[in-house]
Image 1 (spheres, rainbow, N blue to C red):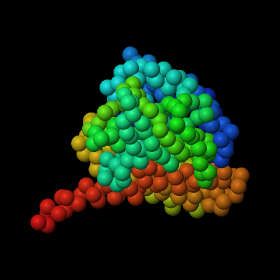
Image 2: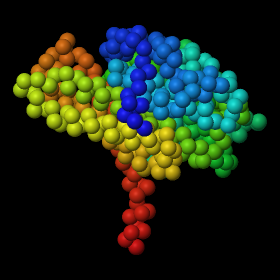
Image 3: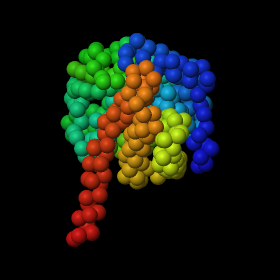
Image 4: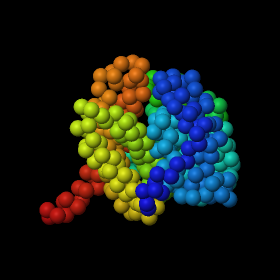
Length: 369
C-alpha cells in the first residue's frame, strides 16, 4: 500500500470545523456527546468498508482505520466513539446472523443508535489474560445472562446495542451476543468520572437476568470467531494512536524555529517511523496476515501507542512554556490528557505485552529443551 493511499482524506470541511470547535468540550464535558454519532454519520464515515449491498460505501475496513485516525487527530474523544461504533458494525459484517445484521445496520450507519464493543474482556480472554465476566444459564428456550462490564464506550441515552462475550451454559462454548439498551435486566451506570474524554458516553453495564435467544447471537463460538475479528478491532483501535501522533508531530513541526530547530531531526525521524509503522499496519490488515500472526499486530499496536506519547512530548518541547498556560496551551493540554489514555485503553499496553509473553513462552521453552 502506498503512503498516498494511507494519507487519503475522508473528512469534509464542515466536520473538521465542528471537531476542532468541539474538541475541548468533548474532552471535558458530556454536553456535546449526543452530537458525535450524527455528525460522523452525516459525513458518511460509518459506511467506509461496509459493502454497498448492506448500505455502506464499499471499500475495505482499512478505509475505516484511516478515517478513525483522521478524526482522532482533531478529537480523540470523537475518534474513540467512532472506533467503538465502527467496531460493532464490523462484528455484524463478520457474523453469520444475517437477520441481526439486516435489523441493526440501518440505524447504526445513520447514527441513530450507538454501537458498543463490549469485547475488551473477550479479547483478554482469548489471550489467556482473564476469564469472561458474563455467565449464562439455560432458562426454557432462551439463555439467561448475568455479569458486569466495568467500562463500555458509546452508550448514548437515546439507545444502543452492545456486543459481549458470554460463558456458555452446561459446558457449551463461549459465544458472542448483542444486547439492546431496551433489554429488561440491562442497567447502564451514570457516565464514568473520567479524567478526560467525558463526551464519549462511557459507562458500566450490569447484566442481571437478561434473556437472549438465537436472534441475538452474533456467533456461537467465541474462540473460533474472535481471532477473525481481532485484526479489525485492534487496527481500528491503533488508529487512535495514529491520529494523535500525526497531530502532535504536526504541531511540533509548526513550532520548529530559532532555538528549537534542534528538534527538527528527531521530529522528522519520528514522523518517518510513524509512516512506516502505519504502512505495516495497513498492509497486514489488507493482506490478512494478522489472523494467523496476531503477535505482529500486538507489536504494531504497542509501537504506535509509544509513538503517539512521544509525539505529544515533542509538541511540548517545541512549544515551550506557552504550553503550560491555560489558553494558548489548551490544545496541547487536551492532547496530553488524550496521550495518557492511549496506553490504558483495553487491551492496555501492559496486557498486550503480557499476551506477547504468553505466546512467546512455548517457543522459548522449546528452544531450551
